Figure 1: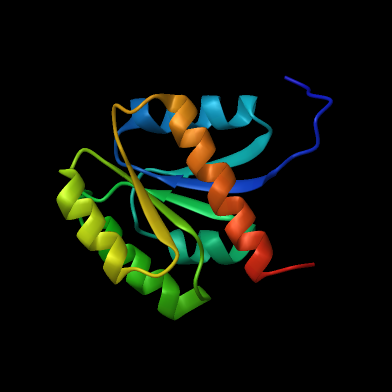
Figure 2 (figure 1 turned 30 degrees about the horizontal axis):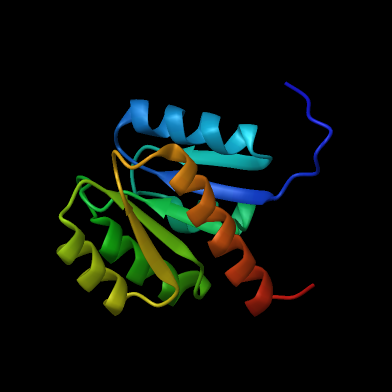
Length: 133
């Protein structure tokens, strides 16, 4: 699929649910993002260094390493990046998580996909303001 719109940047989606990964990638690609996906937190640090995503979309409940622990690991390894926690956890828990993780926000799974796009757009602007080129 080709588009006349310039790419808005790269987004990395880390979620162990293949349907979620496909759905999120499809919607964001339609909106002009390049999307990379990972089915587990393992190896994500290396992937982030290689692709330098502007935003990370992380599931919170994943086997092996939770999204919040992955976010902490990534911050230590590659520096702060805007993160969208995309999870079915209750809002109160997600809000508490975002208070602990710098440059993060959340969106509940099941919210309209247009809200996910708006959230990613907002976080891309945040990253651009922190890292002007």
